[in-house]
Image (cartoon, rainbow, N blue to C red; front, side, top):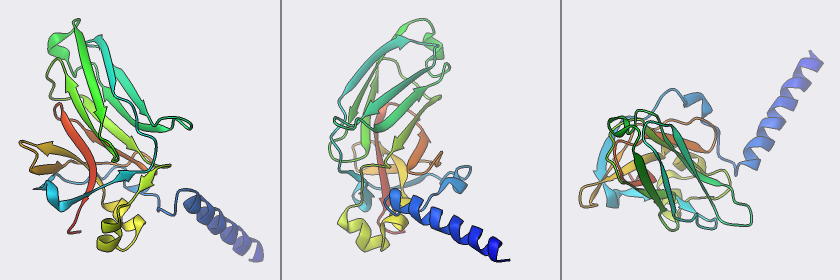
Length: 199
């Protein structure tokens, strides 16, 4: 009985250390198969996740349509940690298969967000994973609304800025791992990691 108790205490201690190493945010890995539903709200009514790290650089990549491609964006030196990964499946530009496609990605300054432009339109097969284990920075407003960083982090989703920039569609978002958010990209445009001001 004592040995079992010690093992449980040891496991709990390891979990505490792991959470502390991630800034105290609880892992949401168990919800990876349950993406959030789409929710359209005014852009002014969301709290965008900020980044404390060196900004990633703008990136332009040309590749052949019909091939899969992963574009990795990294924060600047000295750590060069991953900021986001944008993936294009073979079917993303299927109608233009064999032709060159140019994709430009411009990270938004100071926040977890990016603007994606492509020389060929697309409607499916593209996705983004934002990674924030190192430079997660909850705005003061997020702490006031949600009460803590972990509760704010759990409410985050990837949103697509719509139309003239007055509204944002918080897309179905999953968590492939701790401190990771993933969503399909329905079209070129501007995407932000954000949580609604009204939980």
